[in-house]
Length: 410
Image (cartoon, rainbow, N blue to C red; front, side):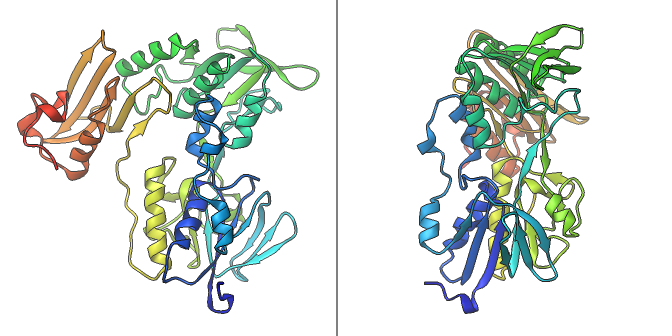
């Protein structure tokens, strides 16, 4: 049993991936004496949010969703509060007030409240059948749709495409609106995006690129029935899924007087403007950047654990590869994909094999890569970038991958 009299009371607000993994990893610290409380507003905690698209597509089942073993955590002394959200944070008295009326005291507070789906200001978007795609509950709502419904997905980024594929696999009629002229415009160039577009169209997904609906028409019951397109066309719709980005959830931090910008401002030790309050994950901002991918958030967790132990650790921003979690679609993107002055590009394209590669090199260093189709060399290219390996002597063969280049990178 944990002796609470001399334990550091660590309270984590937010039981998503960042918060639950932090709680689990803190539990593994053998020499630390922590009394850990994990608080989540969702009834389901500790699940792998990355797998929601696979769950929607019926590629996995609910048994594949846990990120951490919450039963084990409870048995080992972690106090998990689910289905209850924090409504007031008082850094002076170090007290939290929950919606249920409970109060929780802390010595160290970690805010991991994540983010919410960004709802675009489109007329009629306040209807109950306009939703985001962020939680297990969202998947359940989409899974409960009647057969062959017309679904409008707003956003052709990673999340929007994953939602579209999952819905079309369930037999629905899906149209994706995307304001850019090509899909995944932050991760792909126009040529690789065209290959992706063709592949997704063969799955049965319709696309309207370069536009968003101008408005939604609601029935007398308040549900969206039609989307009005930029050319005036009226499209029948049963459900609208907003996947046009995320908004960091910072309301609690702002109310507590913590410094915020786009998200909660933290330093390289994940510390906020209050010495005993930390933040990590999608709700934090470091050096003008916010975080929506797992790799930097896992790095933040490692830093924070060391800091809480009294050690020296510092978070730094590193390039992170992007992969689309769609069965049968292989793509890899990392670093700078659109060249700037001083960059040179190396291309390879095999139309028959549906294979495309683009490498961006600057002053002998690989600074960006796009792989579509055959992504086997993605991790090798990423390693070249991380190690800042001089690739000047392998430029002629670099695009063909590791097997063709010498010397090999360990």
